Image (cartoon, rainbow, N blue to C red; front, side, top):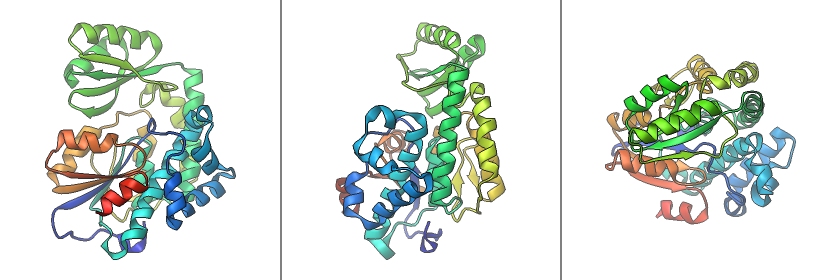
Amino acid sequence: MNEAMQATEPSVGKVAFLFPGQGTQQVAMGRDLAEASPAARQVFEEVDEALHCNMSKLIFEGPEPELLKTSNAQPAILAVSIAALRALWEKQGDKFPIPDFVAGHSLGEFSALVAAGALDLADAAKLVRARGNAMQQASETVPGGMAAILGLDELTVEEVCQETGAQIANINAPDQIIIAGDRLAMAQAIDLLTARGAKRAIALQVAGAFHSKHMGLAAAAFTEALNATPLHTPKVPVIANVVAWPLNSANEVRYALQKQLVSCVQWHRSVQYMNTAGVAKAYEFGPGRVLSNLMKRATPNVRTFNVSDVSSLQATLG
């Protein structure tokens, strides 16, 4: 975050910046932003330099199977998210919306930390590349999967997880819960949840059982990279996935990131916290509108905006 973007008291309501996680990637995302905005273009150049590869070419041109790999998708989404943020800042200058909170879903937490000044962009790119590699390797060592459970409450889902060995990995909304586990646990859990009234149980196209105990190997490898990475005191509060509560120090950030890979993403509770704290506007930066849509469902009183390409940037500018 630029020094001018430190939190101040907004005139009407509070503002949150949101950043999406893995699964939102697609070939050509962010390309028109890079063509239209020098600030966005610089982000892609910084990420390319940090990773010593032409990540921007992969993002803009594919091939899609390479972009979908966890080790590539994570720095790619980070780059597009920060490019969208800086493109809006470049256009608005002194009128740039000042965030009172930032939050990101899983991978998106790293984009949020960059926005909050707790993590430098180049360090973030290297860190999420290491995270993606660790997650991929752990998934190959301990095969597993994830599924979205729609239409059941958290208590029922937790009961089934206790019975089968699966785990709740994400709570995106009261009736949209993601579970993770090994293949046998997932099969048993999906059968039981369907029998107990789930409207749908959708297997997710992911490499493994993210945000569960099966990511223990990944967490250990990632922690080595994290411990070698400088972290700074956030300039605005970062709502952490693990606790759905603001992080206000570098030590708190480091602890939360260490726990994130093996812990549930408490997204709905994070949204509730921001709503209770008085957030009136939420800006989602990056590909897709997943977080904007979840915010609308949970807190209809909050105005949402999305910046993912030139057209949405112009719409946000009004």
